[in-house]
Each structure stands twice: as structure tokens, then as C-alpha cells.
Length: 137
Image (tube, rainbow, N blue to C red):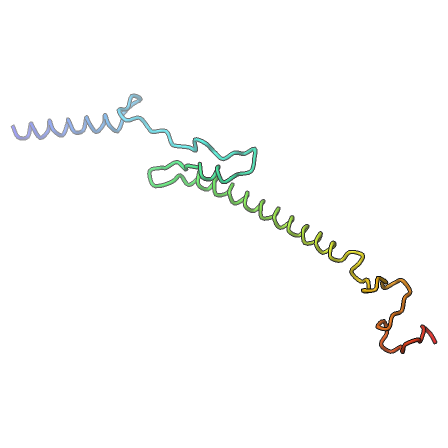
């Protein structure tokens, strides 16, 4: 009698295992659909702080789905590189504009209002010429 109960119990456990694992099209536990990003990052415009804060990555059996994380990190890296390049471009343009503004037409003018090419020879133009001496004499 003991062997009969043991064999019956093994058959019942095997039947339940086959039913749970699924032996056909009508499995007791259907395959779960993998999670994907419900609200992906916008492709038509640059990312903003609100986009990154609202981002929720789907979870897999052992943590986050690597393909989704790689896609998001790649997009964020590209956006940051593009912004860094634009900032560097704007900073160099600003530095050039500031340098041009500083080296305007009055930079080399003397305090008395005469410029370097106006023919006026002041006492500080040539230290080897004495006062009253002209060019070439």
C-alpha cells in the first residue's frame, strides 16, 4: 500500500509540474511580455531636466534591462556633448567679440588725442632724438 501511495504522489507531482511549466499552447503560466520604456525620451527636441526626472527605466528579472539603459545613457551623452560643443563655440565667439571691443580704434591713441600715424612727433616718440630735432636732420 505504501508503494501505491508513493507512486500516486509522484504522478500527481509530475502532472502539476507539467501543467505549470506548460506542455502546450494553453500553458497555466503564460510567458510575461518584456517591459519597455513606456514614455521614451523625445526625439524631436533636446532633452530637458523634466525629461530626465520623469524617466523610469523598466526592470528585468536581474535588475534593469541593459539595452534600455544603454540607449538612454547614449542619448544623454550625445546631448551633453552637443551642449558642451555649443557652449565652447559661444564662449569663443564672446571672447573674440570682447577682444575686438577692447582693441577698438582708440587703443593706441595718445592721451592728447593724437594717434600713431597722424604725423605728430611727441617728446616720447624716440628717446634718441632730442627736443626740437626733426626726422632726418
